[in-house]
Amino acid sequence: VADCVLLEPIKEVFQGFVNDGKIPNLLLSGGAGVGKTTVARAMCDEIGVDHLMINGSNEGRNIDTVRTLLQQYCSSVSMS
Image (cartoon, rainbow, N blue to C red; front, side, top):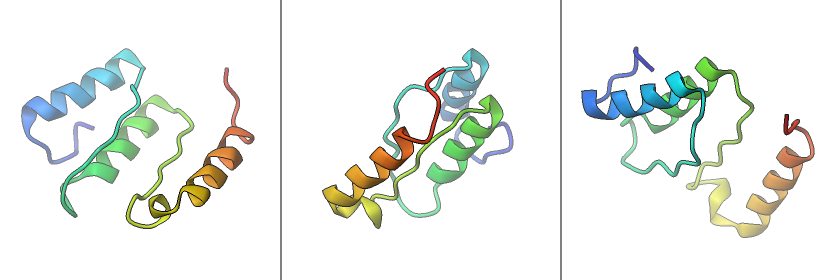
């Protein structure tokens, strides 16, 4: 997260999640190239958690696709 190019107040919030070891459910929005995917992946990688990212422009347009992705993800990860 420290290497992400973000406004400092926003970076501090994301770094706080990493420091606590807990990332809340997030819905990141903004234009292309502002760093949404980069910061989300960075936080997950730093904490070492399993995660599911759904691109709203692609998979997120069809609820059946989202349900299928969620079911596959939930059946493949440990909840411990």
